[in-house]
Image (cartoon, rainbow, N blue to C red; front, side, top):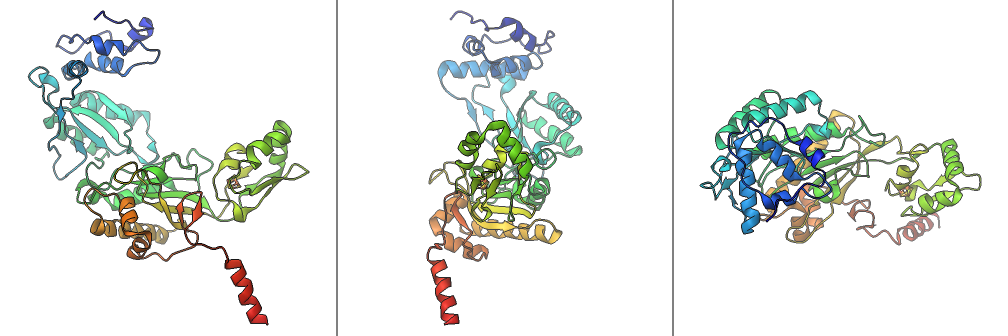
Length: 429
Ligand code: SF4
């Protein structure tokens, strides 16, 4: 096969270091080279850059090319851990170690990121330096669950790298049937829509379940995710067993002068077509004087109007969180969204945080006892029924609980108003 050329050889060359520190000659990689010919920077270029620095990446590229040629994968698992831990590392042993000995062990360490992914450049450099010392140099910020993925270390160096980063405050995340690394959105430090202290919630939950993260003993994985508002930037509804989402229960804040300015700038038609008509519960109307009327009782906090008119509209002032249980991606019963089990909860005082911890313990303990092996919490709820689950974790049924977010409550309330009227009349009459 003819050697393929990158589309922009100049830019491509600028990715590669001039000095080669690896002592092994590169393997020919015609198939991988082809992947660099597209318009976007290729991961192959990144791997080649790292291969200038160490022999492990030279052989890793050789094995990858071999895999592409034979259309087979050559990694197998095993058991690798650091002292005192039962998880956090994904072991990878090569089945073609005779051909590519330098990458015969290529383990991945999952490391917990800081809450909200707030790093300083200094700490990023420090992590990078530690990894260049003990690993392949290949890092992914961040994996699907939110971990920093340090990809490619020998069994021996796994412990050394962990010891070094642990010294300056980093810890391994979860891998296997355990509480997994949590994730939280950027939060109130950078986002005006925040309704809760995302990072305190994140740290509270993770610190409380750290043993369950490091020593896998649950039916399967369990994930916490925290979003500060219903925009849900960390996809907690879809991707976590226990989603905490900031919300408010009073009226949203409306600055009518800003509404008028927005209407003046965009026109009434734009506002009606793009804000009023898109409210899922028809809770908005534009008055003749270009002010906005909000039917707050029917607002389901979808955030659409607030996202469009950020200056004019804001979440209310009585803030708290909604908790949803059971979201996950495909497994036995297909994708599930979280179910609202706590429609609103204040999270201001230490006592509120204790309540949150208690709820999380109730959920995990109940699932640990009743979940089948390899069964996520949402699947267990589907199997045993929501009523049994709520009874198991000690929550009273509330009409504001929602099975499918943004569709309907599972406690039917039609006819309730007529019933109230009937009771009133019975009293007076
Ligand atoms: Fe309607 Fe959503 Fe705005 Fe509430 S937040 S008023 S539901 S568009």
